[in-house]
Image (cartoon, rainbow, N blue to C red; front, side, top):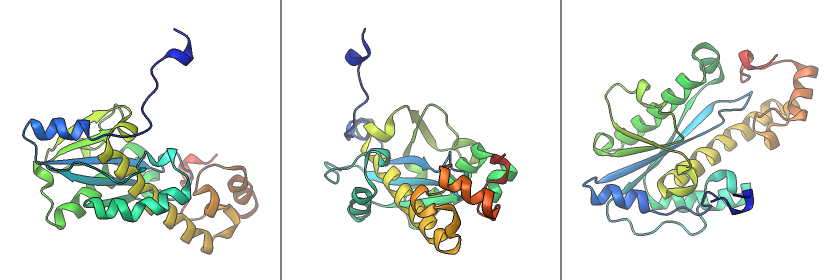
Length: 217
């Protein structure tokens, strides 16, 4: 089949997965997505967003954060916050260097879920949907949860799209703040990823405590 005729992943999410879970008896679905996995500076961030039974819609224009402009993400963020409970957890560059990125993803996700739990959200009763094919979350949990994985969930499932927007907007804000203290690396624009200006800054000024030293050769 020619590439142009192959099924393309959806760009606009739905609540189909969440509604299937509710029909099967779940009261809550928590979408999970990460941001910053491939950066060379800054934390990795994991966003979580809870959708309760009875949900029938979500903010207009919601998509995976990678499909949205920075301006559009910033406009959507308060609408996502109004739509449901959520949180963002982080693991630092130093933690990534010591423990590795897979551990860091799980720990950041655990921290985000703990924040939800602390606000009275019944995390233990939820179906927890992680974007991708690999369950990096469960090994970090102290108590097992109903974790499911789905490739393309960040595009297809509204709960995960919302988690993606939460994580991206929050992490971008941290990197813009870091840019004020360390203006030589272009973090206001590259957000800690390996852009040319970032590597030029490293060559001229060396590394900071926000760099993932084990990732930079």
